[in-house]
Image (cartoon, rainbow, N blue to C red):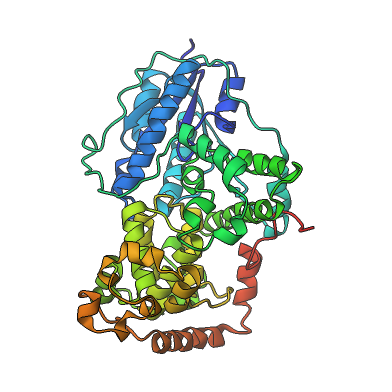
Amino acid sequence: MGRADVQVVWFKRDLRVHDHPALAAAVATGRPVLPVYVVEPSLLAHPHTAPRHIELILDGLHDLRESLARIGAPLVVRIGEVVDVFETLNREIAFETVHSHEEFGVLATWERDRAVADWCRARGVAYTEHRQTGAMRGLRTRNTWSRQRMQLFAQPLHPVPTAIRGTQVDPGPIPTHSDLGLTAETMEYRQRGGEQAGREVMRSWLTERVDGYQRNLSSPNTGWDGCSRLSVHLALGTVSPREVHKRAERRHGEPGSPRLSLEAFGERLAWRDHFAQKLEDAPFIEQRAIHPAFDGLRPETPNQSALDAFTAGRTGYPMVDAVVRSLAATGWTTFRMRSMVTSFASYDLWLPWQTTGGVLARWFTDYDPGIHWPQIQMQSGVTGMNALRIYDPVKQQLDQDPQGVFVRRWIPELRDVPDDLLATPWLVEPKQRHDYPDPIVDHAAAAAQAKRRISAVRQRIRGDGSTRALLERHGSRRPPPARRRR
């Protein structure tokens, strides 16, 4: 083996061997391959990282190590900052090329990727980032985005390599929570991570559960099984988004397939890439508003009593509180429920979206920055180009949980409240609701005030050309549908 012929495959949010362009490119060179995953202390300490996220990553690392070992090159795991780890490994076994996938993550990972590129350049190591999603680096105009996305998704999937020329580098142990100085969270339920689990979820979704998706995706009662539940695996890359897309398209072409459900699902896959592209185009948006006119609209320091009530699930609005408590216990809820609690925090409580966005990021087991931060900004009214959506928590409860099944499960204090008053428990005696609080705010009044504040900013920027410029840079308010409806 030469001293400068090793192909490093740097795994990040792509913990799989199926349809892995970076791995396929490295193996195709015929050179020795060194698969590496780096546990980064700076990301462990990141304010958006929670132990539940690390558990999912550890699931994925164990799966990935087994899969790679079977084909000749077990996963090498190291703890440290990536540049430091690469410097050490490069002294042990010199690199020729580092292959990785484009990652659309928090600002810290964007800066980390730039540091790795600089390190490779300084060491004479080639650095190649491969596309794995519909979002892409260096997009000059959104006018071609949809076409380029579909061109990528039309390409054949990369097969799992049958054999890899490995190296003699010690793989090292996969750390535990205690090794990393973390305490595992106590959760009622946590979805299992890893490629094996992801592929089973993909199989069951497309062959058994997809029918009725468009009807089931909003309610927390029907969404638990009626949504794909692939979001965790797409966020960590334990399934390939291209493979999910191709399998859904193939299922769509089968006789008697649930076409409306599959089309609705395909649209959401396209939305996922659309929003990831927004983050790539503006990696600062976890901190600053897409439209700068909205920076400073809300206070930088949150109202602590309002934030505490929100995070404890004690705002006095049962649907909001039930969703918050369920997120803390399971890490997942439907898109509509996520929108509702974000709306409530941003409009009713007037909390800074960066603060509640961080709280929700730590709760969501499927936290994906490319979706999360554009959506947090959209639901908080600070993009300057999206319709203002303020959700009425009482109406959402009546619409999405009319029998009170979800609310009663997560708010046992309301067990004695009659069904017809469950959405408005403040209308019954306090002793009948067992210390469940009165509403922290009057929704109608708080929503009206929020509308006035945001409308004032919109009035100031109307006609100044800034919104048009944002649309040109970030694309339309909503992405095009995945396929034309028949």
